[in-house]
Image 1 (cartoon, rainbow, N blue to C red):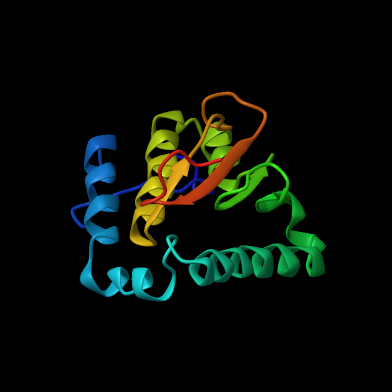
Image 2: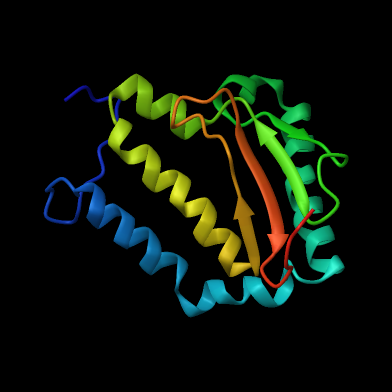
Length: 153
């Protein structure tokens, strides 16, 4: 194996199969310590949506100030006009997608995309998504809406 590529391995130095990686992600994101995030950022409250948006915009601002990372990170594109409810953004570049395609780890990409849904759930959001780079799309879109909102617009 090329030393420049990482492989997901367990402590016994065996490869972790995709289903095990998916379960590992679920287990980690269901840890009680992470559930505290839902107390701070609650997608059913305007303050929670505002906090989450500010967090994402802070990440985007940092990337704008550090252009040396432009080609190895996400490129956030915010659109306040797309939806009335929740918070929307998309990106056209994803380091997970780039890494998996370059290294031939395409089977891992769906697991990485699933993590977005699990993280959204922690914050009482429902993630609505139509496109992913992992599935061959031109963008990964993220529309986060409070999980108690019926018929979001």
